Amino acid sequence: MARGAEPAGERRPCGSVVAYFTSAKFLLYLGHALSTWGDRMWHFAVSVFLVELYGNSLLLTAVYGLVVAGSVLLLGAIIGDWVDKNSRLKVAQTSLVVQNASVILCGIILMIVFLFKTQLLTLYHGWLLTVCYILVITIANIANLASTATAITIQRDWIVVVAGEDRSKLADMNATIRRIDQLTNILAPMAVGQIMTYGSPMIGCGFISGWNLMSMCVEYLLLWKVYQKTPTLALKSAKVEESELKQLNVKKESDMKPAEGVQLIVEKDVTGFEPQQEKEVSCAARIAEPFITFRDGWVAYYNQPVFLAGMGLAFLYMTVLGFDCITTGYAYTQGLSGSVLSLLMGASAVTGIMGTVAFTWLRRKCGLIRTGLISGVAQFACLVLCAISVFMPGSPLDLTVSPFADISARLFESEPLPTIASPEDKPEMIFATGMPNLLNGSTTPANSDPEMSPEPVPLISVSLLFAGVIAARVGLWSFDLTVTQLLQENVVESERGIINGVQNSMNYLLDLLHFIMVILAPNPEAFGLLVLISVSFVAMGHIMYFRFAQKSLGKQLFVCCTPDPKTVADSSPPGNTSTV
Image (cartoon, rainbow, N blue to C red):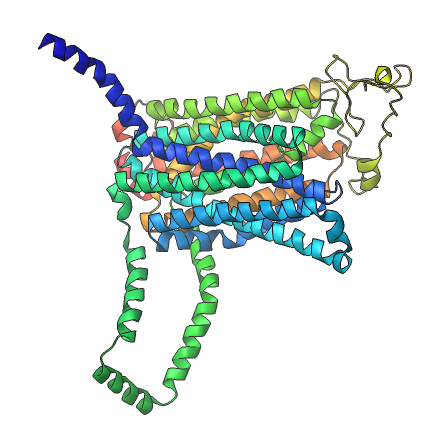
């Protein structure tokens, strides 16, 4: 007995490990990691491909960004409504196939363009090449819309069902999903960037197409496994049942008995023009249906108890204080090199992961709604550093410079690269735009004459700016997770898709406004003003959340407590404050 007991005891840890790796939760993580990795590679690569194709111009990239933002803004509610009205497995599999097939098709078209660009330029006076550009942007936009549907159904619906009634488990799963996002945001572009650097854009297209083909098959299988392991995913609210009943009623009417058919013909003859009017009404109703869905989605979003919390999150998108092309471009003008920026991006990923850890800890100690308040205060306190940096030495803030003054001359004025006569004359690595190099601890260009070079730019301002941006990621991601879980817990199951679709639309709307703001004031001298506007919008977002928290918790808002993780009740909507 003793000998037989030891192997059984040894097998227990192995059994628990195997059980975890075969659980629905882990399979969901794995599928999300594969999907996000492919998404990040494609989003990074498509912008580079479009710049490469259009002669190092940002025109196609700007058009692509505008089309993507506008499409999600207009179609977010309709996509969410489609998610609500169809079965979970059908939505997940359809959006997965459409997304990956679109990326594969885009990759094939781009490979053809890279191979035969010279020939395409001569055919039909270059119109065939223009058609290829339009096809790439259109299909890439379809892929992004399908990716939006996948994110809504998996991250806002499936994860809630897999977690069940356990809110602590839901919080842990949300945090893990965000950690996967943070890691893939850094690693996936690095991987595909290396392939494109040491290979070619065409090889990069082929790699991404092959990855998406393989990933689609694996993700499809993982979705099916998660669906089998979680029987409650097969159960959905009345919205799906109503749409299915309508389809059944149509089938029943078409399969009527002959006697019933004769009776219907007689009724049509008696009523005269009524059937034609019904057809006209039904046709008009079908045309108007997307517009009605769009209106109903925004009305439903406005009527949600967590409306102010969602708006608060959306307002955080109206900012230049992130690691996007705008902030990195400003950093280049202030003398930061690519290597330094890559280190800063890595640091921001680390603080983002710290934010997910802080979220789970704060939620256990203070409850969900108070976690959002603490996260908001932490983020805003860090962004105060960014506001201070505007007035520190080294800041180029100069409001006397007109934002419309000869922008093109500023953007494209650069020194020609030196001619290399021999390997010994090869200069140190510099940027083609003549940006400074910090690798030698200096802010003067590596190939410039010290006597003729301008005075080095003080780094106090830009250092404070990035210190604030990186530190604020802890509060930002903790706040993002808080609002995400509030939407998951407080939105009715039958409206999860449409409400989260409208939330995505709001996010894209504010993101679009921040790009418009940069277009209106593109000079580095005006960047300080953009920083102050960004901090103001973040403050407004957190004020909205504070108002939501005040409505939800009332007098208990500032009561410090340590609730039981299993019964964290302060995440209930404002109408149910009696449970707090």
